[in-house]
Length: 136
Image (tube, rainbow, N blue to C red; front, side, top):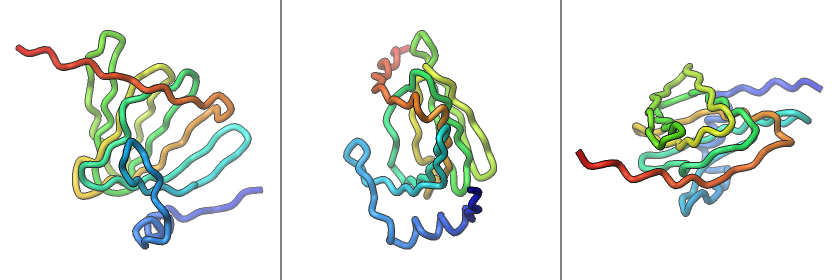
């Protein structure tokens, strides 16, 4: 069955205080389900200043980030531990493929995004310890 959801209504729901936050790395993060099928799932997240989803990676799923409101940074590490920062805002899309360590953080007053993950049945989340920056 197909059901349409209005993204702005979901943002308003997160802003309303009616959604209980989930704890992520000791932080209260707001999120709400956008959809779920047998193969994929999507949630909307609302990060406030200073909040972040800590470094992690997935073995077999794609993370597709779609910016809805505000600004965020998605940091992705390569195989030798060097990172690249991707700034994302409303209307931006970024795909993180399996095996790529990444971290999501608020880069302004707020960062609201939809995260789609598939294939859902292969979901896992493995913590990643980012290497310390090399002093120059």
